[in-house]
Image 1 (tube, rainbow, N blue to C red):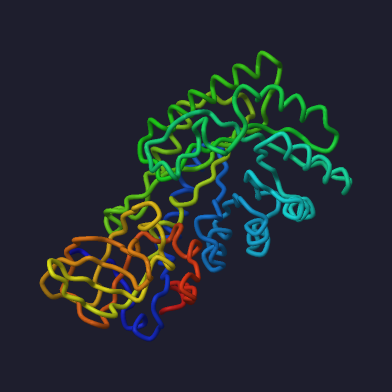
Image 2: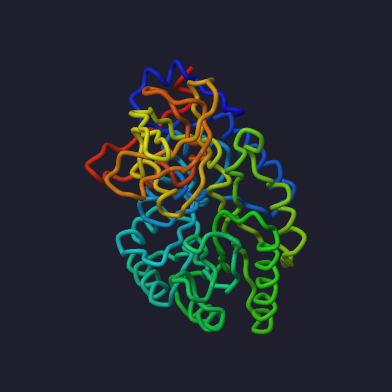
Length: 387
């Protein structure tokens, strides 16, 4: 098994489980994003904070020049505290509270991505109370399916997100009649972990149709926000640590018919941070069952919930053993039968105290951790710290 490169002696000094972020991988990823998106002068990239809000990770992303995409008031606050410029912060979400909207208004964020008429009315009311004008885009539900897990598909008609295409014209006209909101454009997001460019082509085609519809009503959008969704290669984190950003951005450049001066915004999350992170865990016991053997880790679904929640795959490496491979079910200590990371996986022979790396865990790993079973939250360390 080809393994990743880790500072194992430094790892032995730390209490497990913990997250480890390889900042070289992160910086290389960000450099590629800036290079490929920079080929098109009207492309703007925001980082989706929900993927990973570790302050040390956010600092590196902010330094790269990316903006911030938020889906809660807490994420807006995390963006502000990390130093993202206010005029590069966008805020989406179906249930923005008055407190969250007011905080965002106080910090003059760039744009609210509005998902319902009641939300629009509340933003207008709260902005009026502050004597401000809030910039808004409308999240339109394009009824475009994505080839991904049902739980992370967000663009279908039955999803809770966004405003229906049928209501688009009416809602825009409503916003244009309000004094304390300024309509900027349209926002979309069809799902996550998308690897087929045809899904993004389908979104481009739908946006082109909607823009033609708006043109008939003499409505011009300053910006189009296509969300994110680009996936990573969970099977080959060592060989393919950086997604194909060249093809991703080129797809939008080729198929999306932008109008003169129109700006295109992206909200990438998993594709930015997914491959830089690993969950490092220690083998507590090797248990021989009737027909199988278990490697029982000190990390569980409280530390990385994706396998239990989505049946998601994460490559697992025994980074402290070079012995011949044996077959294991890799499980955690949580009092739930679903606390399983991977079944029937071939790994270098495991012993009590060995360190396992669960790869491609930089996105939706640490940020989704919980204290179920009264467990402590895992800490996060970076390669810059462990030198």
